[in-house]
Amino acid sequence: MTVALVLMTSAALIAVAGPACLRPAVRPSLLPAAALAAWLGALMAFLVLTALSATMLLFPHVLDTSGVRTLVGGCLSGSIPHSSFGTLVQLGISLLPLTILTRIAVVAIRSLRSARRHRARHFWMLGAAACRSGHVHWIDDPRPIAYSLGGARGAVVATHGIRRLGEQQCAAVLEHELAHIRGRHHVAVLCADIAAKALPMLPLMRRAPEMVRLMVELAADDAAARAHGPRTVHAALLAMSKSGVAVRGALNMSGESVAVRLIWLQAQGASTHTPISRGRLMLGFALLPTTLVGAALVALFRVYCTF
Image (tube, rainbow, N blue to C red; front, side):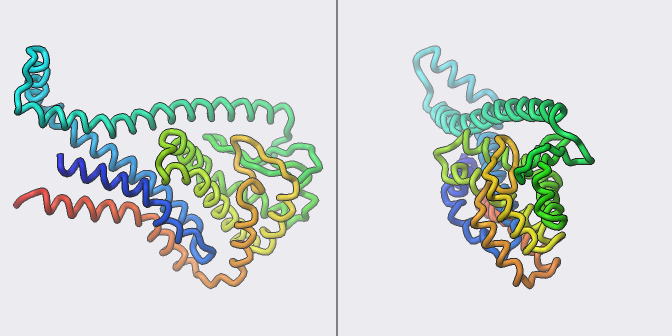
């Protein structure tokens, strides 16, 4: 039970101190995809630690039910043996991670069903109002609007208004939205929303939707900047932000933290990172939560187990 309690404590530390530890990752000199991987890694580490603690508390009783039988027999007879109090405490403590996991599962099922219905309705409306060309659904509207939809058949939706921005800026906008689909950013945002709805009292979960949305937009901006240049993306974002249109359930180019992204794009003009250094940064931040959790588990194993 000691290891299970330490696992629960580690999960609690990640949930409480995670936002403060991950704050340095949000800076222009670092790859946005690395910061996104670190945030998602922290959420996954919390989930894995919680599941492991529940498993370690309950697994002995799945293989050997003698302690549970003794406890139940004592309850029925009105006299609980002293040897059963440990089992009672262990089962009681296991209710905490089980409740957390159940809450996450219920919210996840509801959110997935709602997102699936919304996407199906949106695609049905696009079939009637848009003209498709490849991955892009074009809508006849003079306002410059572009957004992407996730799912198995993700798509980019854009108005003819973005063509007025010029060929380069129009291509940058479409590249930004296609980057969302390639990177499965809609899944990352949905996971963050599920975490916040399930456990809003925890700082990591509460901040996750805002930060993950910012990171996916910066990651898409980065992909567009590498293809068309940061100045082009900066000008396109500035023009797109004036439309003021946001679509629920989609990732809009001008929908999240425009001021922060404009500053980030300005800083990219003087960036000296090579592809190798960017890859190292991304790998390091992606493995950071897993490395910390793994080190804690190894230390616990050495202390708890005897050879």
